[in-house]
Amino acid sequence: MGRSKNRKRDKKSKKRLLDKLRRALESSSSSSSDTSSSSTSSSSEEAPLDCDMEKGELSLQERGGEPDIQNNPLPVPDNDALDLLGSKRKADISYAEDIHIEIASRWEDFLKSGIERDEKKKIMDIYPIVGNCKLLAAPRLNVEIQSTMEESVLRQDAFLGRTQDELGAAISALAIPLDKLFSQPSEESKDLLKHIANAAKLLTNVHHSLSSHRRHIILPKVNPTIRKSIEQFPIDELLFGQKFADQLKSTKELKKTSLELKIANPKQKFQSKNYKRPWNKSKFKQKGKYQDQKTIRKDQRSRLVRRKPETYTPSRFQP
Picture 1: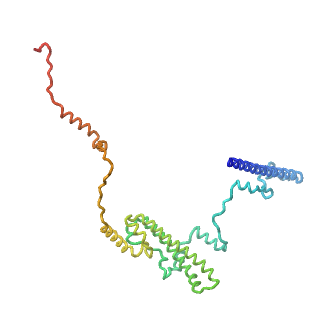
Picture 2: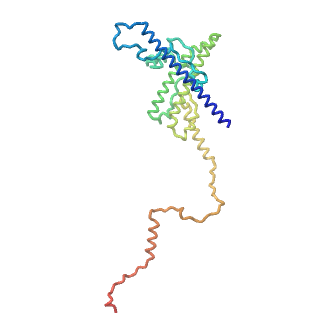
Picture 3: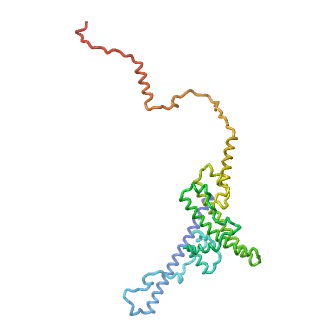
């Protein structure tokens, strides 16, 4: 009973709110029509029509054009009515403060159309890979795996490797101001040091994710018996590690020794404690399509006794 009463109350409240919305819309439409009619009458009485105006040319108001929203704003409904319509969706992305317009415009051009090949090569030549951090270069594919891969897979891997080389040059460029700020710390440089270090962290993470993606493309083409052991090999200057061949041999030897050491479990006969039911002929499948019928016919023919055919003699010749 209590639930039905609450539902009736909710329905009544919703109806009231809808009536309020209808009344507000009707009042706004009537007020806009009154203002438009009064404005047209006043303009016709006060301002005379020009003689140079061509026949059939009408103003926007006489044609029934759109009303001016700024001069005639719509009334805002109550909060309860707005709740019925539902809440507005908030923007998921939060943006930072604006930078200089010249920097932003150039970055947008680079993001849309990229950098020219010659300019990219010049920039990469200016910022070579840091000497004591050689892993910034793209890891090379192991020769043992490269010989077994298809050309399409190798092309895709080479493209991702070139992208990693560009990332390595970008991180090396950030390393120059980062090293100076870190070697000569000050209160003003701490803020800059923090931002540059965070940018370098994100770029190194992208470099690592590209390496893992390259491995993810290659691993499905590898023998599944070795795949699990290869996945655990670390990434260094080579994509599957410099000790790939040695580790692969050791894993194979371990598997062999484990199989030799493993005791073969003897097969135990299954002895059911249930009562054995009588033999059922329906379990055994028939080998041929007409095997049973043929055997039956053969048995019948072998059992038949061959008799001499009786000759017919008419009754008058009988003794």
